[in-house]
Length: 242
Ligand SMILES: C[S@@+](CC[C@H](N)C(=O)[O-])C[C@H]1O[C@@H](n2cnc3c(N)ncnc32)[C@H](O)[C@@H]1O
Image (tube, rainbow, N blue to C red; front, side):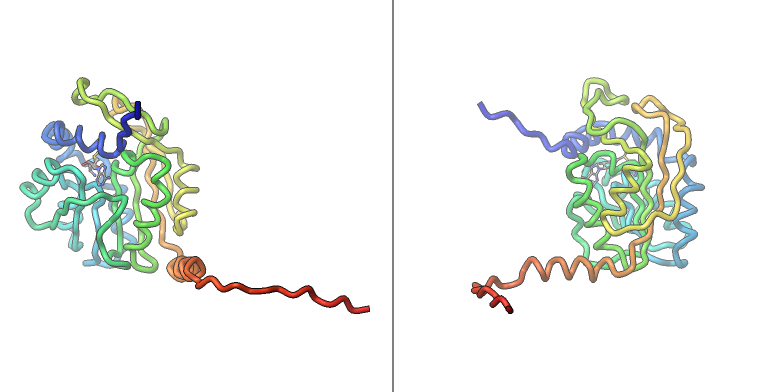
């Protein structure tokens, strides 16, 4: 019999459909991460365009909008999007999977990925980060906020133990390596104690990285090489020179 394959990220977002309101009530007014989000905003020009990836109830999108930035949000849970659209009507929130962002190359100056990359399985992190790099302008910045801890685990959802939740936590070193391999250079990394360790981690990792200059050219070059027309070439033996 064939085993049923589940998409771990879909498992997570199905659970968010059920806990979206509880999550919003708990976190919409939580200011703990604001000093770290200000670090990202401080690297961007006033008014520049930011994508909030896995925007949840939209609290950070709202904050960045009020700071004068142009903000879009994407999330893969319809309930989260409904809450965000209701609470922050001036931001455009779209239903989208962060693993395949539907935006043109170089659309954004900055990306905020707060507590959402933790729902992408390890094997899909490289392509997800390469996609983030693609939608950033050259020299653009990304901030990832993620818990430190075990990778690729399914546990009872802390807000609703009858439901399951998929988490993929990180270490500073692992996240740095993933980002560097996807064409970013790290500018800032710090660990801090988590205010709510019940999610399976007592530490938060804040990481800000910059899109490496020339990375688009490197990628384009790789793609061109992969698409070279194949030609049959007969290589004749070179004559030995006596
Ligand atoms: C822990 S919440 C974080 C929400 C918000 N960024 C915050 O910091 O409060 C994780 C969010 O990521 C979203 N998410 C999970 N997998 C996703 C995916 N593949 N694409 C887009 N969003 C996703 C969930 O629906 C949920 O809203």
